[in-house]
Length: 380
Image 1 (cartoon, helix red, strand yellow):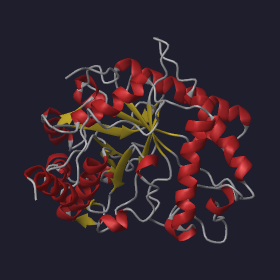
Image 2: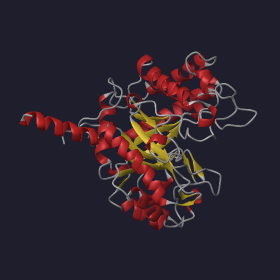
Image 3: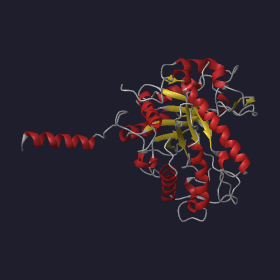
């Protein structure tokens, strides 16, 4: 056996047993035609995730605890002086309504996304998709909801209707023109928490094959047919999985996903505290992302009413820092305008504000004011 061949055999062996980890210099979005700024967002989020996590809040600048529609306002900014680095919005108003209402909703969200971009922040979009077959709600309701996935994928009776709905999204995406003429990048996170049964696209209501088909068609139609090139696509189950195999049951394939994540409220206070379990599942997500050149994120979490005054540092931060993980952002859920109890981020006077300030000041967390040129590619 020659020396060269021996080295080849050893290298091949270690390549087989030690998965390759792609870094921000080699990993790119799944869209070969992704805009320069979309690629930059992907690369910069991956770089930042090595040492930091961006903090996000759903609907942060649209409304908050006791207010709605104010300019340049968020409860988070009122507490710490900066908006969240990641602002969550929703496509819920893009279908199932009158044409006039849909037009108003698309215009309002367009302005929100462009404003966030101007400030240097990042937008992620969830989709509480009103059932396109039975109507009514995005929630599954026995004896009312239709198992719609099989009907909206190719060959289904509502497939053409689904394409029209995607066209609304595609036209909106291509209308996100910034002041410099670039289209604003957006992280699109459809069909979240699909491993539960509370949404009509959940695991009890469609097969893994049907779900994967839906995911692939959605990405392909937006990217390849409608020429949307300013989306990154995020895949995020709830916390039902216990190992990598469970996590990947409905995964459509690496060529169809830019970001993987997990939603988890249960382990961080809603159903008690199990931080080790939450961190272990986050590590499954992070490890897979590292190996495959994907972004990883803690896509939803929170404690309603923030009843634990030290939840930010002693629960959330502790969970994310328990293991060696790369998580580009963490997002907590919304602050309802009218409800006195439905909120997930602090507002002035809340008992968790002192701990949130410690969370804000921690070097691991990044807020909007901390972001610099996240839509620009650099050589470093």
